[in-house]
Length: 314
Image (cartoon, rainbow, N blue to C red):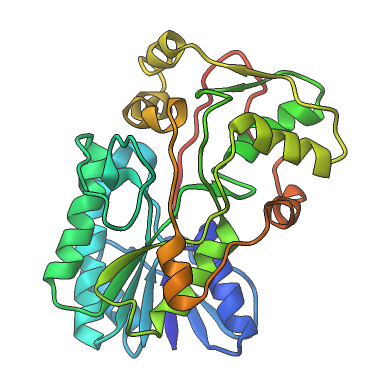
């Protein structure tokens, strides 16, 4: 049995793909949500409750950390969740497969590799660094699959801009439109987690999820428009002052200030090591975008006028 903790976008895809492979899986979230499939057992539990988590993960060969607390609450919510996951993996001698991101690198001036120093100074970046350090220090079998911003129907530039594009309106974005930026298909995140979880060469290290060559936000959304049968998008970028001011009243905008550098200067992920080691490759961009278009909520993000408020949960 394999256990996925977190029934959000990544966790649900991991569960679905494991079930297709014939694996019995258990997906754990506070609400007991998750995909419906004969091989998927949905369980309600609090990931921060160490006793409950050890109970629902007993007998698991792999525990997938696909949790994503509220964006503004990372410093408070992540430590007890991470501690409970580490203890659960240690108690059951399970592999802990961690869904990671690039926040721990902080500000960068060159393409990021797995050897790039974890030099984040912001509080969310420091949280992610400590999580990884604690997992390594625990002596368990673990790895982290780090991805850039998702090509996904939710929590993505596509969700942010597409409703306005479909309505024939200008789409506003909180970053630059014309700097290179890496995007990672959410399906490739799931595939990397699954592939590396049973390969001992992966354990004890972080790996970058296979990602296509960097694109600008403008070129990504032009691709979205083409595949969705829309005219070329009308795009605008919020001035830095507007993003800062929005943070006075909006918790997401306030937290976004810490990582705005990722969206105004080149932010490039080098995933060549995972390809060379495991033979994993990224899904072509057109295929990735096409796969998510039908699932983007039509009214998910306001079409303009303010920095959008967006938070995440498991």
